[in-house]
Length: 290
Image 1 (tube, rainbow, N blue to C red):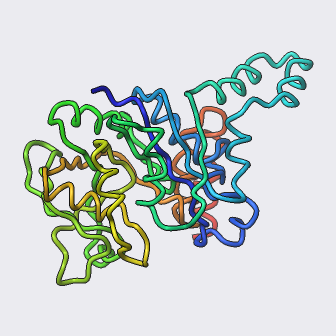
Image 2 (image 1 turned 30 degrees about the vertical axis):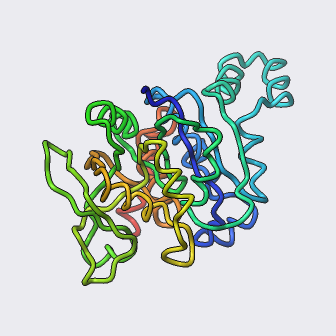
């Protein structure tokens, strides 16, 4: 069955981005001239996704407003004759069929994904983690969907993390199948040193079969007292196996101040409008201050 639906969990408080997160959802913090969330939706659409569910929480109405039409701005641009800008603004609301639902209680990523059960139905689906941006020539979600269609199993996007950081991520038990593709038969969330299976960890992209909902419904609170998506994916890996794809490109952690700054620089130097001027300024700044 073709993967046509995606879920983007965006219900977290964003405590690593305080104090700004008090006023602006971390998913709406800008990378150059677009909010972080738009990059993820663009990736999903470029991967063939047509229907997207964004899971929010209280205080995140600005996400819904952004992906809606903007009559005031559109009228202003139309009056000024700024046709290109008007079309660009309208395109944001027309990228995909975007639906919203609230996660009423902060019970973890697994619980957030479970909120999508009625939206997904009996279909495979992609999950794009709200804090993770992957800068790559080919959309990572598209690669995961292709692997799902080839092997008929859930697929997780992975990358190696430094040994001293693995305790902050999950750790996967993997065996290489072909270039960048592994078979995964187990995983653990935030392992202690004696529980590390490998230094491969899931970084922000997965494609899952609908059977994951049965596992989430019976999942008990795990690390941090939350329903962890990793725990249910681990059970799926032990039962039927999942595939792991070591994606190329650059991963940006948008849930951290440093990660957001790095993403802005990386995208800023390539930006069509300001890239050349920004590169020159950055060179001069580094030369004069570092």
